[in-house]
View 1 (cartoon, rainbow, N blue to C red):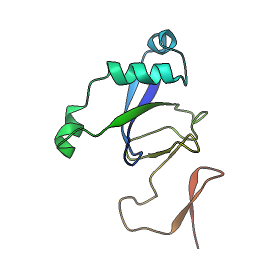
View 2: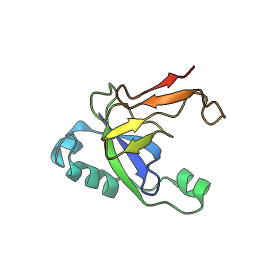
View 3: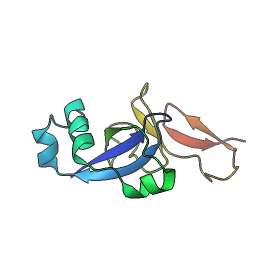
Length: 116
């Protein structure tokens, strides 16, 4: 099974992650292909929970994500942020959504590190 993240176009926040069969991914361009991303966007319906929570469904796009983080730095999860310029997913800061600001994000390791 392959995992794909639905990402808001306006702020690159991950809204949800869905599973797609490997056969469907292979039949539509294969791993990491824009063809597979387009197919997922066309195949997967809008999530009614997202629509209910936001009032209107935001513009979104899809990116494949990997459990082991072998591609795109980290496995995408809800509230992660996608950085197209780095092709990677950033997890939320520890303590999110609280005010804990004692962490900085290391763009080499793609992990949050506690600051002194």
